[in-house]
Length: 89
Image (cartoon, rainbow, N blue to C red; front, side):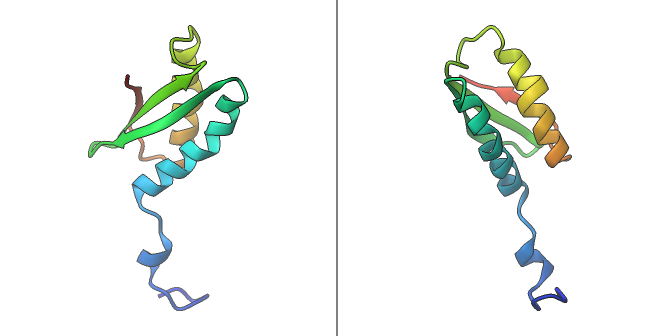
């Protein structure tokens, strides 16, 4: 039980999916600032995160770098259980 408010720990902890969604929402403004966007498609049982790049990011030559050095790096930093981030169409 939580000492601060008396709730159970399960109520205060976010699910893996919620944590991933929260981080995706955190990185979206940076992509939107350059005319792009990212949509969370799914979170697989093996902790692989599938996203869809949109707008200017879709088909951009730098999209692979954005995925691995941007979105995946930040997700793994904030949610260490993330195995990989994969772009889907």
